[in-house]
Image (cartoon, rainbow, N blue to C red; front, side, top):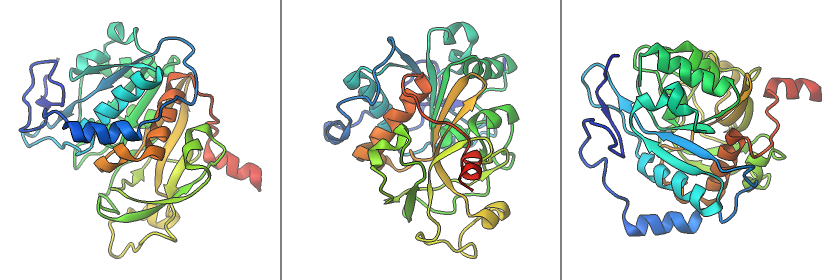
Length: 310
């Protein structure tokens, strides 16, 4: 099996850490997050749930792996949120071997927290990940963990079947930077994964990804997206793919069915301040519970819903 240079927050295997990456959150940072965490889960767990959270950031060209700033904060959020609400127990790993079929049998869902790069080229592990979800389990990804995993510039689709499962691949750079303010449209106010927003669109600063094929509203249920009419949108100043210039479609969270399994993906998770944003944390918890199979939510593809309304 090919071994790739890797680094991560929690060093559970022999990897090469980046300077400062394993630093513990300060007590003040933990307190800020604790005050924002939901006290109760939106659904009662049907049974004890286990979530595998993978941190793996690799590059096979010898350059420094990309590490998203929110990664350690999200690790704390995801673990503490599960403990506080009783929704699930989190098991951390930095070893892609954790994706092996024997190990995955114990879990209800996999969470890729800002994984980046081609985290494995082993076809057994790749097939195991897909089969785990296809056979009825859950998949959760934050920011780079979905659309920017199994991606390394300039080739964005190094594992096409993974892109099919997630719902798309990131491509073309970031139209909005972490310092830009965007208007978020709550597309499905009735969906329980969006309950925290109380049908209210909102402003937020965050880095934005844009998606290439296989992204399509024919295949996924968009929960949150950018309202380009109210955001600072100018394709002459911003890097925007031709297809996104045509449809102005920039989703920020979605859910989808993958065979018998469930997928929750959110672009949020680059800027650390989402980790002490109470409505956003409720949204994250609801998405995780959807993927675990405890929160029922309509995952009908958005295009089909739009056609029904005509």
